[in-house]
Length: 231
Ligand SMILES: *Cc1c(COP(=O)(O)O)cnc(C)c1O
Image 1 (tube, rainbow, N blue to C red):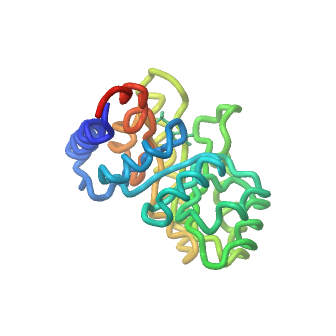
Image 2 (cartoon, helix red, strand yellow):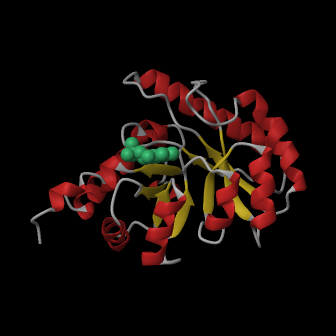
């Protein structure tokens, strides 16, 4: 299926979720996660009107960035090794995976201007997931004051992989709660207006619970092979 058609479906679902939650769809940034797909497919998504693109590996970012340069808004969404920071820092507009002080230190050192970062929080507590546990979040935010090039634009989480909607919803509510706690610190470097949550199988719940960024791969740009033979 063409990105255009998938985009129409996803946009419709976001609009409906916004209606249910009394929210303005303009508050929700749609990020196309292009990690599974080709450079051409990423270009197709951009041309279809998706201005936010997300990658989780530096190689993927590099090849897609070369094709589209700084026309899209670029999001780095994957776990980030400190030694890779220098390769991505001048290409990305947001880093969604800040989860340790050593990484903050490296971003601070390599950046030539403040970088919008989202702190990754492991709300569900699953061991396989990256991110701070909620109890670590406030001390972590306070520690970031020593890094002038880190701006905490928001928080990011991944819900557990489950069919149980209530478990997913509880996770997203937990991230919203964390956001309110960070905002109550009133730190100028941690305005924390963004909530990055929701992927292909749970973005509607995320939008209902206050997501301002949804990161969608499969439902928006996936299934590229269906393109073969089409003109
Ligand atoms: C892959 C990935 C996504 C998108 O996953 P889909 O289920 O294909 O929508 C979103 N966020 C992160 C951090 C990812 O790694």
